[in-house]
Image 1: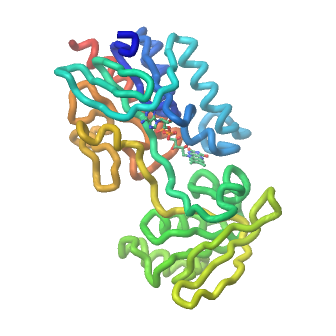
Image 2 (image 1 turned 90 degrees about the vertical axis):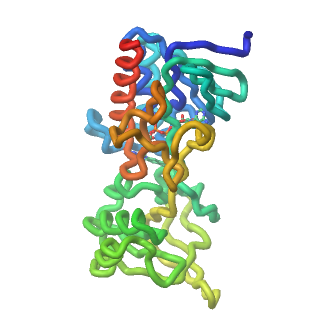
Length: 312
Ligand SMILES: Cc1cc2nc3c(=O)[nH]c(=O)nc-3n(C[C@H](O)[C@H](O)[C@H](O)COP(=O)(O)OP(=O)(O)OC[C@H]3O[C@@H](n4cnc5c(N)ncnc54)[C@H](O)[C@@H]3O)c2cc1C
């Protein structure tokens, strides 16, 4: 029995969505248990400065921001446990979470397991991430490269969007794509091709990222087919080849879309199709993937969970 933990409400995930939910649930007196997963604090712990989270005019460190949220939750009685959930099942109205360490039962479950950007896995990518020029989010980091020459890699709608966003304030944007055309929607592809500041580099793949060990300053590219190699000087690389939502553990119980994101019931942005299971943050958001939005949906899901428990 020691291995079974029973709670009224459990939050899975400790990024800004899960932590915000924990603050709301704890302040409502529901003593939530937060299961932190393999990345306590979530994706923001992997970045240096966050400049677009309201309330911090001089920016704030990603780790510092989530650490403050965690302390805020703890102050009101949220409890944190370092486990990773491997499966979700239902026993009547009980939600059962199978963790690596323990089994958890709850009435209300809030899932905030986030997503992870797909990396290129090339030399230099990790070394220059978190402030060194390699980024997975133009909305987050693009403004650091105002009037600079940058590159985006990818060929879908997200890559097209990133390139168009950066073209508004960067000097030039190279769009590196391994095929000879974009697979983005027609309208997005047309916008990219019409933008004077964007230069597509077709049939090219990124072999490595180079720099002075502090900041990147160039990409080494290879031409598909010919194998020709050349150096592209640029201040930043925005990797936009997809995101993987952390949803597999619940795929037997909850509906996932074709990208693996959790589906909301009736597009209401909070409820899943299972009564008592609520969704928050990037794991159910293929569109925006921003900290403030994840935090906002965490608050929404917590209020929904609280009202659902109250009504029972
Ligand atoms: C490098 C980088 C920089 C960024 N910079 C910015 C920025 O400047 N501004 C901005 O607004 N956004 C930024 N973002 C995006 C922002 O980090 C995300 O939108 C936000 O973190 C999403 O929060 P979340 O809580 O939904 O998920 P996440 O932050 O992804 O957290 C998910 C949590 O779920 C846990 N988890 C996952 N699976 C399991 C499981 N099976 N069992 C238990 N726990 C699990 C993880 O351990 C983690 O704690 C950045 C993202 C990255 C990667």
